[in-house]
Image (cartoon, rainbow, N blue to C red; front, top):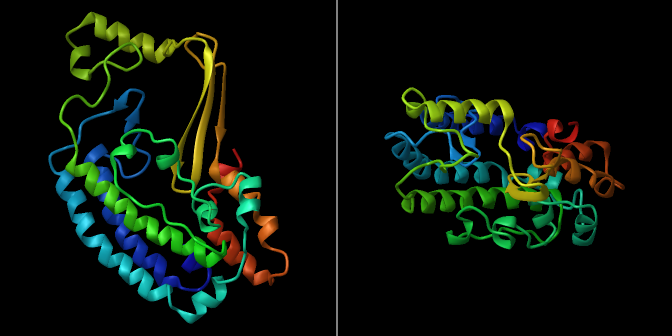
Length: 274
């Protein structure tokens, strides 16, 4: 979409071609192309279907060549380089001071990725690099994201190769029972009913859990008073923090440069105005 913002309209068309392949995988795995609700407390809503791995392997085969096409169109394109290089510079110190995370932070030369700094899930068992920039400008933010695409493929391949067998959801009072048990077990039916009407009861206390989302640190602060509903929930969205650094990147530039700067920050406005 950054290419689309700056006049390289064909880039969005190419990207939609690959997006359709990815959404086909979502549909094969979850039954839905968008917002599937596949991840649940305690695990997943269902196991991977038999055809899922083949579709994902096909993506791993096709996408590197498609990424080469993107870079051939943009990375050395003189117009693209001129519109992005030296534009919207954000220093490492300013990025840290403003709470910037994700690609904009790493493009400024700060080596920070929660998958490495505070590993969760299986990330401590994956071999991948954390791409970084040097100048903190729009062009570095573009390059960081392009390199992250390739690192994502490395992670996906390792996840497929190391996929364990066994249940896909934890057993216990915090997770719903298997649907096939609800029809044959009164206890499972009561468990399902109480979980969805009264909520999961967890000990009183508070916790903050962040993950490395595509745009930066996405964190949830949850406070419990011991009842089935959170006493307080606060979301730490990456787009809100990253967008707040825009005034530091804009002075001295042309009005047209603001489009490139905003595109390089890549905010989701629903993430900002919650």
